[in-house]
Image (cartoon, rainbow, N blue to C red; front, side, top):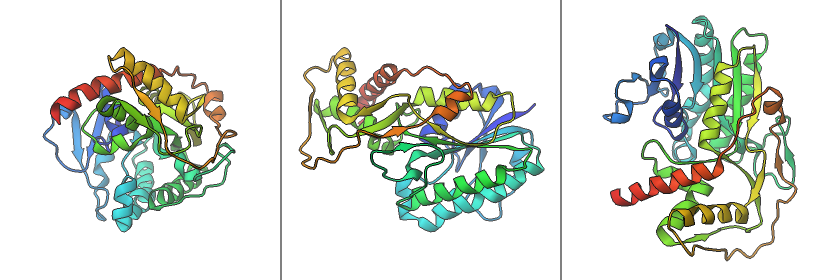
Amino acid sequence: MKYTLITGGSGFIGSRIINKFNKNKIQINLKRKKNNTFFKNHNIINLDFSKKNLNFGFLKNINTVIHCASLNKFESEKEPKKAKLVNYDFLEKFIDNCKKNKIKRFIKISTSKVYGNVLNKKISERSPLTPFDKYTEYHAKSDLLLNKLAKNSYLDIIVLRVSNGYGYPSLNNPNCWDLIVNNFCYQAHFKKEIKVKSNIDYIKNYIDMEYLVNVIEFFNHYSGKINGIFNVGSKNNLSFLDIAKKIKIVAKKNKLNNIKIFTDFKQTETNNNFSYDIKKMLDLGCLIKENRNNEINNLFKYLRGYARKV
């Protein structure tokens, strides 16, 4: 039987993918053993990709790799050498061994942040990359490497550049509350307010995790040959005020009334002409419905349980 391998299974995105996929058809990579009921009855392999002499025998019987494993922003700044090794150096050897094992498809989860802090512009897959820290630098380099390796290869290599994600974590993930929408929900739940630490009219693109996982599933099961880089985001861009208002409405349905929205940010920097172009993904036939309110509602449900734990 052929399996889908999900690397970084304990991460924010990886663990949500595990929730969605049939547990009998996936194998999960974890850096170390975890005594957690979430992984009970799953097929687990424990591998630390920072180790130089890695045995790639784990690729036997794998049909597709969904590569979510990487050091996050905070870890990359703290351990830049390890970030380079895991987020970039490791990938060429990984792809080479995927080819040797006749794996059909390799999907890497990247980030829209490789385009940099771009103002008032339309961002497409052809836009220049302007990484601004170690996290975005090594993601940008690995994206370009994979795109190069994809040429003239029977192995499908796909890079998904994901915009600002949000949603409830399947596993306890403290860093997830730094995500913009998650942070607004956290404030609304615990402080009965949403304080925006920027221009309240500043526009960004947001993507709910259920939608993202469905997009990943689409690429995983796509029947034709496919290579290249795809922007993954929402069809609609929203200002901080827009998203805060939507959160306030859902908060009220969760009996959190009189949420105040405010900012003490004085600069008038705007991003009104910004757009995140996902036409390439849509033209492929990936026409998945978003459900922003449902994801925000589930965030508040999670926060009720989270509050009891803390």
